[in-house]
Image (cartoon, rainbow, N blue to C red; front, side, top):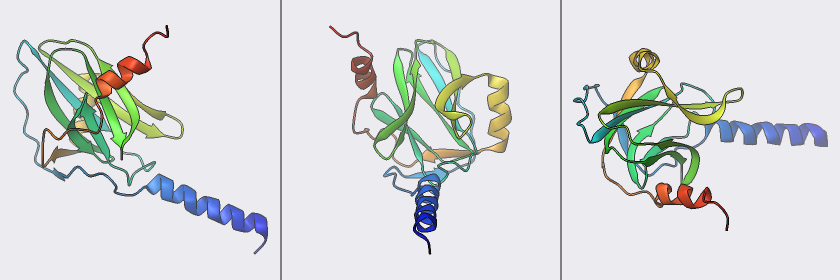
Length: 170
């Protein structure tokens, strides 16, 4: 085999491995039947996080972290929800221990927020807020997941991490 073809074959194998990923996420989860949560209280915010059903990174699970606590684990075409005190939070999608995308959530007392994780060549890698109607449509097509040990701490407090990262330089 010619050297440039061998190099091309190696690059294709490496890219396929990255795209398909591996299942290296320590947080246990399972698919479950969806049970609608109650209405958030006046000092709470209900957060739904949905993950795009994309082949890109499909073998990699996202651990969804609110500040320093793992709240959900998502695979392509899945979603979860959780309730937080209505204050500022940093919602982060981790792959292994690396933050891939984040969403700064401000105070929204008594509200429901729908976040959508996108992973793709054209769309890029980001988390955005979407409207309830779009979220409900996607939820009808996606699988609902729950984590087996709620309340597990992440390796870092991401609210503090992003606060320091974006703090004005002195």
